[in-house]
Length: 91
Image (cartoon, rainbow, N blue to C red; front, side, top):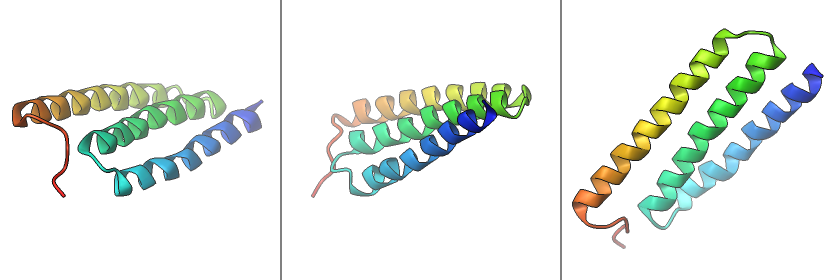
């Protein structure tokens, strides 16, 4: 069972490559922010899987902190874009 959990964690880490591509090529700031949210969500999922697979409950606490940071980052992005009046990049 541990091999399956660790394999799923590795697969999620490979999915971050798609997120990196979107950050680099994203036509708008909103696309880039969604990719950053993907990083946060994936980090939480990977940490929870590793906590279960390696029997390290302290990783659950780290996953909670990452989840909170991802929510705060999304709120800060929305506040910044809303105050500027749009989410489209020039060019």
